Length: 333
Ligand code: KG4
Ligand code: ZN
Image (cartoon, rainbow, N blue to C red; front, side, top):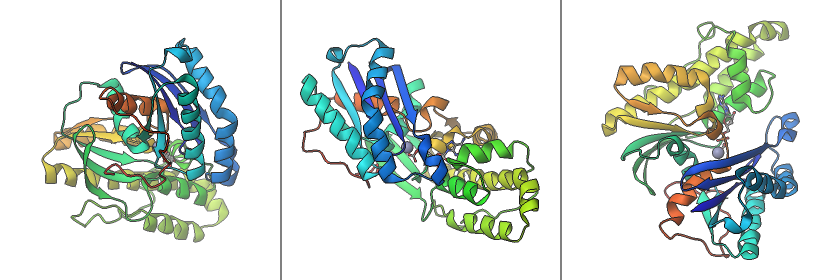
């Protein structure tokens, strides 16, 4: 079964070709235009998708050496994400579906992130835990089987990726903030600036990151521009460390509560190298198997959408042309 995946939920226009679960191409156009605004501007994102989507799809087909007529189906993100951005991808997929007379399926973006892990490990066995850490989500899910998810905890305010993005803005760094903070932290000492772990004492599996960003803001307000400039690597290292420690703290609790010692990490923050490095210690200390997707499949990409779509389509699941985008789609819905 050859599937075209299409992803336009935020600021990446991406198309991929997946054949029986193996990725033949994965073309990602990242909208750098948002960098100057320090975050994604929804209207600009929609317009950029509209401009790029056809050429990105064409490039994915060419790279995979597949003709459009050979496709067996189209998998497209229909939520969660930005309404206008989702509309572009979904309508494009519907147009293709009519034009090529091929079925299409709306895919949950979060399920795509979750299954990015299975691109490398298709034989993964259930149940397992998934920590979903992206720009819009920080959640822990128990994955009972494909399509059957139980919510264990999530952020009460900002997502971990959002904490990176907002922290980067406070520190005068670019967007997206995660890679910027990670790069700057390489030359910093995480022990120089102490930040407390949000909700660390709580037995619940919920997160809170908004206080952390405020703590960073106050710290910076008490420093001169020159001090900030000199201490930026240390500030980044300390800030990054507390976010990562918070994620591990709640993961330990989730492992203990459920007794499930197999954990996948999904979403853009999974690309963080410090996070991956510390995961080795976490895995050894807690006797837990921890899996990260390949770097290319951490941040938004269409391969993960095609992959999740393939799992559903091969069981005969397809969408009708009346499908609407759902900006607030969750994994449980
Ligand atoms: O999954 P994703 O591409 O889009 C959403 O679905 O939100 O995640 C984007 C988020 C951004 O907040 C970005 O700052 C963060 O992932 N991110 C990182 C890294 N790369 C991307 N955070 C920390 N370290 C990174 N290397
Ligand atoms: Zn995403």
